[in-house]
Length: 362
Image 1 (cartoon, rainbow, N blue to C red):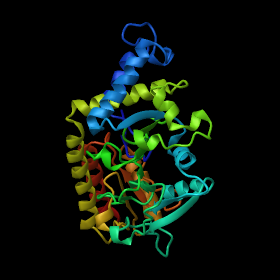
Image 2 (cartoon, one colour; image 1 turned 90 degrees about the horizontal axis):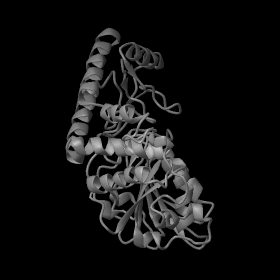
Image 3 (cartoon, rainbow, N blue to C red; image 1 turned 180 degrees about the horizontal axis):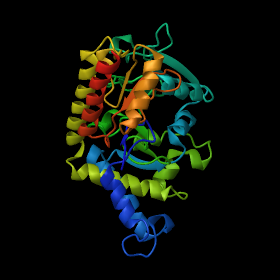
Image 4 (tube, helix red, strand yellow; image 1 turned 120 degrees about the vertical axis):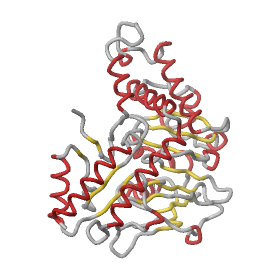
């Protein structure tokens, strides 16, 4: 029996995508071997590869000005690869600080040029409980780019309106909320996302990059770190993680089959309303630190009155078939990750458990 998986990443995958992989695992489309065993230069794998790109392009409405790339190294490698390509000792980039991952991204930029904190919402407790307001941003119109993290898995905050940055290229780490709803890709010079939240398994990074912006990338770095290298080779410059891309294809096909991103947004908003409705009804017991306007639909965080109750909550939830609810190690508490593979019924089950937990321990 499968558990209800609230892990923050690697996260659960839609069951139809997994079932498709199970059916094809030993014999992919009558070829007598798994897709994992096919050459990445062969027509069988190439068809899967191109289908994944096509599905992502269709679902997000990616314009012809942008190109989809498959990379490795996780979002953490992108923290370094972005400034490696687009920052020099003579230039500066703006960073919008909203959590641990934006801090890590800025730290990597320091090796290549100047990095400015254009906005931060860190509080006296060194935590982030909201995203910046537009009027709080001190943007440099001459910046090489502005970098943001669209959803913050650790602190449970999310941008619900993307910042206006003028003519400066906007780069977004969307690792934990890409594909949760439709977005206007044209607003961004570059989007990158580790797949292991909403798109597929770990081991693959999706990049959506403006071709004109990409052309400005450095040529004084190794080819393997240039975005243009992957663009020129359809992300087949070297052997990609073929099974991870195959599973991404399965997930993207599932998203299309259920109605695309508009349907996912409806489900995701319903899940958020269920969870936060329960939290707000028992606000003295489920203590949510995030300001309401910045609450994440992907990662809902809260604390119970004591750390002992936090631990009891996680343990009793596990016995009830729900896993992955322990908060990030540096902040503690409870974290409910409600990515696309988590169903509305899954969250209803959790909310019913929370109601009983209040009656028992409140």
